[in-house]
Length: 513
Image 1 (cartoon, one colour):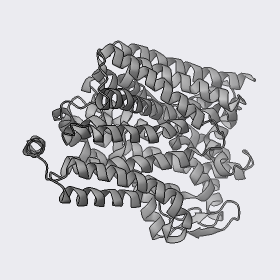
Image 2: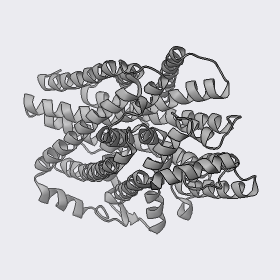
Image 3: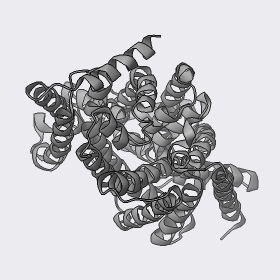
């Protein structure tokens, strides 16, 4: 291994060590289960904003999104980013403050399944159990995508065995998350969002310079059919373009609907200390998301130009998701200082992955220990035993995720896409109805969860393969079906008790105060 690679590796190791130290420091502030899972509801506005969005972006910001743009141009990646930007803003605007207020009033709920169960007075805990199982079903592959991204990074750059690299990365994430809990995850997420931002700017500046300047980048993009069009997709294999029609645009923008059901993002809303500072968090989060996604897409365009300039070998399929890694490796060949900057870029990829995986592991862990064991099966545990159980569950979930990520050819973008649809369709409509519709009841919520979850699988594996007008992102039809199920079932079953509607009105009055 030459000195440049050693410098890069040292930068990454120091970064990872710092994350573990932060986790150890934050562990001193975990006095009970509520602190471990929700940070004691003491997050400030900046930490809330940046940790929520860092948790959201995951490895696809520096791998999946640039990879899509590299292969097919700006249409698919661009409309996805537009949908996510709109979803981010609207989620902060209408959900954040109300969820913070409502979840605290509902018996101080510390998890999303807790909130659903308390909101609808589900004494049998059907809602809690089903919601917890859904979190486990979709978070395990989501976490696996993060582990896979880490494995690809180290294998591509240092020629370390993919499986060894993936397992070591998982161990680091597990270490600081299991020790420090939600506060550690949120604090490290803030740091990681800063690292991600620096990495984005470094790779763009270097990439444009290597490709021969901005003119060369744009000339290369213009030469490819449909590459810069928002209504066409470029085919890298044939060199031709195909239409990207209205249905495809609607389907892709539907990514934004997923935000209403993302447990690891919604938990940050519940954890903010002062709900009146959510406006500040919203502005910070929205601006950062728009800028970071725009730069990530542009990296794909720049990466294609760098390839055409002969600096990087042509990438195809899931290999395109390593374009940032290839460019970082190219940067490292320009001396020790450049190698240190390249190491920072790679730390940025790790930051994307780790900031999402830690939040997902916590959410899945709390679903099993708090919601299934304590809530559904009424297992009596002290706070100490509960925290030990949470950490054991976290280890088990991580182990399962490692098994799922074992295939090095798996696509980060595709795994994230399916998990995102699953959460968006099962939790999104239920969350919106719980917060804004007084007439909704637990039977409607149960029907919505079931209908949304089933439709995600049916549409993905049975209907979407038919192609044509049926080739829609599964989140959109599943979300619509879930909304219909909630409305119909709520209206044909018994109206909520007065206690529930009075609480709803109390929350509304508090929001308007």
